[in-house]
Image (cartoon, rainbow, N blue to C red; front, side, top):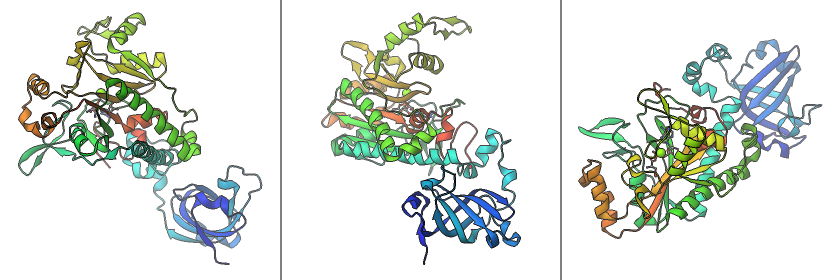
Length: 440
Ligand code: 4AD
Ligand code: MG
């Protein structure tokens, strides 16, 4: 009978049937008259057994790692291999080579390769079991983010990423020549997203952001995927609630989409408990003072934090790891945060701002209520020594029908690092960009 063409994810529906499957040789092992092939087609892995003439010496050398082949055979419950996908393996009666694989592969990537060599061969490394699972979970996370926002009635916008203004300060900008004019790669799409509020209400975007950060840390990229959200007519409390609900709902949706794959990468994956701890910046200073978390001063001495000190990442992470649960750090002093942030009504020196910290990773979200008063925003520009006229399209929003509003940015790569419990952010990115790496 004609063999049905299948993807590996569907094999369990076709026991004892003759099927045709195409894929890459993930791994192969040949004995005298037998070859065991682990076939990979992007949807899963399948054990295939080739015997007799199918492994004739004249053709068996074609069965190299990463060669593409089509195998036709019968899906059979294996004698004892319970781990086979769908509990079935493919007993081949025919196979043909689709694309050969060069013998030099083993020399390119092996267990001795260092990190730089691995990332030079990222296109090959991505084919690995762990890396390919992470890439699929990244796709699933993006699907879950969109499901969340669409089901909550948000609209999605596509912002420009080549811009002539800046959002998060003038340092850390990548600049380039745009037909004779200076232009930058965007650090954040927030300002553009805010202009969409009168257009389509609750709005979000998923776009690349760029930061010329010289930091070589486990969680800094120079290009990252930025999920940004903006909501009109909300309060600061509602903003925090929305962030918290979004994070939990997205993890829940990811588990719903492919729990098995998710748990294969992070066996401890689970939806965090709500509500998240809310801790004011001033409480964090007291926490550090009481728990021996110190700041290094100009002379390299360890000293206690005082109100007004920036809490650097390392110390922030230490506090977060000690507490061991998600923390909303709230109400930062204004001089420490972006100029566009709204002040707290109860204390004008503080901002209605928040960073969401996750154990193991640290900050995954930064957000705030925005200054909604036109004059106040213009003053903020002047204090920042920025020319507001270049931002007329942004400030106009306060001129023609302003509203209290707030929003946030979530680093998708940081989110994945946290939710997959990965050690390093570069592992969750297909082709990561960081200090000294802009290839392949
Ligand atoms: O805290 P940030 O700088 O905030 C903004 O850009 C706001 N305009 C966002 C907004 O309110 N719409 O960045 C937001 C998040 C951070 O919490 C972090 O998760 C991620 O973006 N992020 C980075 N991720 C990887 N590498 C970097 N260099 C990152 N810089 C920021
Ligand atoms: Mg931040």
